[in-house]
Image (cartoon, rainbow, N blue to C red):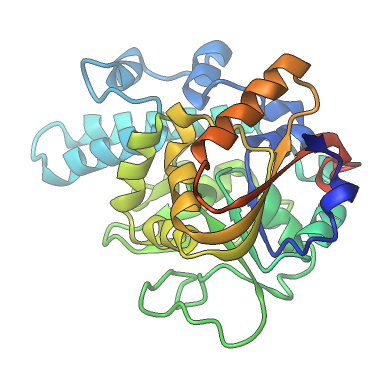
Length: 321
């Protein structure tokens, strides 16, 4: 049975997981197949030989972050054609920036105060989105009451320094985010950004010293492999697996092909109560299939399942500024 949010609102939902449906609810700009598709359609000026690196016979990915990482490693070990490799790297990076700019929403078009008001009610917030909406929203309250573990020198993440000593709402970017970077030594850092900071500046158009950290697309096993290769992403994923009590999942398709690693993390956790939004724009028969698939996945898990119409939750209401 698919309920409305008010039917289950008072069941004490402590933790939140956001999916791309949340971002689409803020702006239809996020309704895209992939950033690579955006780059192709919008003709962002990527060199043909740079575009060819994404093809199956080369790197075989739709993820800009992975291609940038491979080119950067080639730049580090190559003694010939260094300038050409650098030019290739910067072209892919600029193409990424232009694709993100096309598919992202402007700060002034987001009701950040209203979103922050909702987010503040949760103990832990997980998001598989890489956009700036959650970051902008918690920054609208000057980050008061929140933490993201980038409290070390240079806004860096240290896996040996993750203890929280007072009650704060923690946010975890499961697939990275636009404002996160991987430094040459592997350190993960956060770029401080305001609503006025351009996408170009956040990602760094001419920066060859670090790589944007966000997994924008790919099948579940590819995403999990990338997560396990990175200290910060692995930490976030482990925190999801260690979660207990209750979890609200909002705006997430939970497709086995693309999100099985998320489903498995929840099932292996100590979560005992799980609420999942059902996209209200789906046909009734599609809603039934969605609910049935989730029911089947969590069968015999001991987790109490609740489903509710997405349009009845505060995260779907008046989020556009």
